Length: 162
Length: 327
Image (tube, rainbow over all chains, first blue to last red):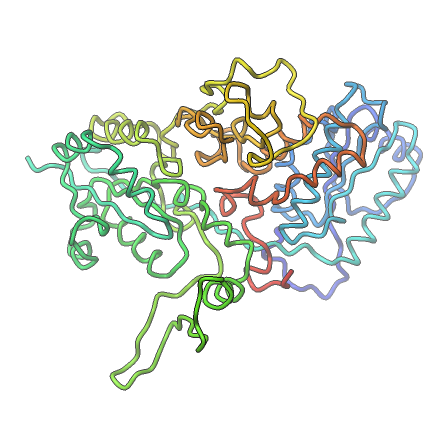
């Protein structure tokens, strides 16, 4: 799967969402949605982290480069962070990252942050469904193809380097 | 026994890297004693044909600076790769794409319009722009093709080592040359500089507060900078935390924040994302509206975070650079 080589398919576009959920609130809520047998769009791949403050902006950009059409970040409500301030850090990074994405020609809507507490299984379902619809409307993410670093040709060094 | 042969070449660059070689001052005499410089277009009269006439691997090492934008640069990089036992990407442009790499934000037509028509210093009433092929009575004239995007050297050829910096600091150049001569190079693919963030060798390190928090981001011309205190603590966008050390922080010494030219350490894949992460973390506000207002002070996020590394980043280029929709 890659945003660079995806061909036009006759099937309807099925967006891929990578979701980073914090262990204490949003991931637990997703678990609750599951045990409550709620059905939500199957387009999401959830990655659990201990805190939304652990989300390195590199993770988000790597997800886009590797084929995600959207990235969803889920953390505890303001004031509820297990580590006190991690979700505020996530908020500030998210705000700045959206600006960066916009400058790089990527629709800001492709990155979404939601505060979802452990009891809000219903909200997990709603947010994932909404985001899937939104991405379907936006269509596939098309990034500029990136040339791979050349690491193929090893030049034998006769008798070692001078 | 003949001395090892060395080549220098420049691609999309400003000439500052050549200047860095001159900055070696008398040390260059030691280098010249130890090697034969057989190709260096900026200083010597050897031509491409002279390189083509060499056997493969005849050059012990070639130092290539500049990013890759045109077909000619690509051809020369490939030629030097074939003729050299070692290729060292020399300087930020060759290492990560550098300042020319920021052109990946723009479509080729837009770049030509700006450079050949709109720029205030341009007088071009006939709208002459470079053509790849021009028919004249004597035949066809050609120019190198201007590619859609700017690439780093290792996105073009296999690179053995990297000498980072804009330009590479003299100390690192000497260290690299000595390592090559004394055959004590690290594993292939290494960046020949310390693998730790600049803050560790910053002269203002001790003035960094235990918990670094700033109320607002500022630009150097908007304030009187304290010449002793940590620049980040003063609100300046100093990229030291996300930049490799090895330069001994001359910019900080001159009261200017680090702009990140040595690139990231080996632990980081995307320098701009790490800069963004660090700056967002230390902004002292938990209020959404206030955060937005403070972030307005960062007028050019891409140009600030990726000043030297856009082609090496995850996103690489604006989609319009490759013929996608224009912004």
